[in-house]
Length: 273
Image 1: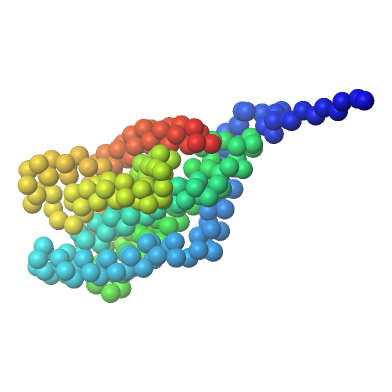
Image 2 (image 1 turned 90 degrees about the vertical axis):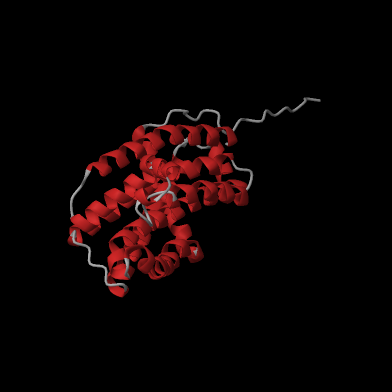
């Protein structure tokens, strides 16, 4: 008898391991579109950028306006711009949590045998999240303008510039939480770790009160906190219509965050793949 033998072939055999920059961009945009469709079909995932800005803006302005600035109208230039930064930071947390959930469900297992860039599955959803940051920032400004009497002196272009700046900062800072998503053991664990980082960054800043009103050690942290520089840049754009030195420091801080946490995220994600 003739023995029949079969050899199992590696599914990845013959596939090129090199992915060009053009292909990486195409794959990133494809996965961004997938993430956008996922948002549309699971609208409850958008509550943190649709419902939360409305509630937080009304509550914080009403609760702290009289105590901090004497009135809500005097507090608006500080709290509205501060809440833009704080809301975007909250939206960043969801980036890592959603990534961890997709990894736990095996969504990324199919990518193991595809000639796909290893950064595309991470960068794609983050590009889609730019839409979330835009919605959160726009609704925060709209709530202040329509319901609280906020009148940004920077005008339409200043507010538009502030929203774009918040989107850029949000995308950059989200790499921190993306890394948490790749190293966490569960979505709940990633959320817990992310909140422990998000709250100090957002609250120990100049978002809600002037930094010089804090104790000296908190003031020192707030001064070097990249979120403080981001919020100051947003304030300069919305309230004054110009770009100040804080914008440069904020962009530098965001670049450092991306330079550190993007490679860490890709490396950790590749190991899990």
